[in-house]
Amino acid sequence: MNIQMIGTGSAFAKNHYNNNALFEINNRRVLLDCGVTMPWAFHSLGHKFEEIDAVLISHIHADHVGGLEELAFQMFFKHKRKPKLFIVEQLVHLLWEHTLRGGLSQGEMNTIDHYFEVHPLQANSETEIVPGFKVQPIQTLHIPDKLSYSFLINSHFFYTADMQFNGELLQQLVDAGVQNIFHDCQLELPANVHASLEDLLTLPQEIQEKVWLMHYGDTIDDFRGKTGLMRIVEQGEVYRF
Image (cartoon, rainbow, N blue to C red; front, side, top):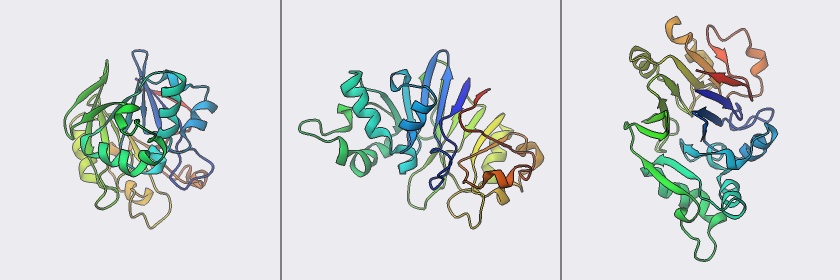
């Protein structure tokens, strides 16, 4: 499985694109989240929308879903097909009504199904999105009273999307066989809705060795060499797991 971070930046970063990822396995490509900057970042890396076989969404924040309108329009009018959209069932209505309807609704094209082939997911239940790519959504705390999901992929890779620090969950996942964790990281304090670097540095070494930091701010260069055993995910690079 290959993963390329289309962007590694936090919602407020200006030197890095939104934290969105492209997974490739068995010549199939899954886009995990599609933020505001994703269309430009995707183009800058030499990719085209028609390469995407499926889109997986974690939660309803603009840096994770703000690029879906352009994706939908390009796929519908230019490429004449609906992208496969995988999203936890409870988020489907929210995504359309709170984010996409204002831009995409026109005439009789007034539901999310006009633009996407929607595949509702169930939390804590594994689904094979494309051959060889199995995902289990796990509800994790990000913003109070706002649904957000992280993803256990193929039982050994954990991608946090956005979540507050939860060392107990990370320990449970590692004990269950997770080998690599891509974790969002807020560099400066206070960190109210993301895990802070300070908190992540309290993790035992056996977990830090498996953690890759992403969704960071523009001051990331000031923290190189100060992340313990945890590595920094670099924007645009391809990693193989």
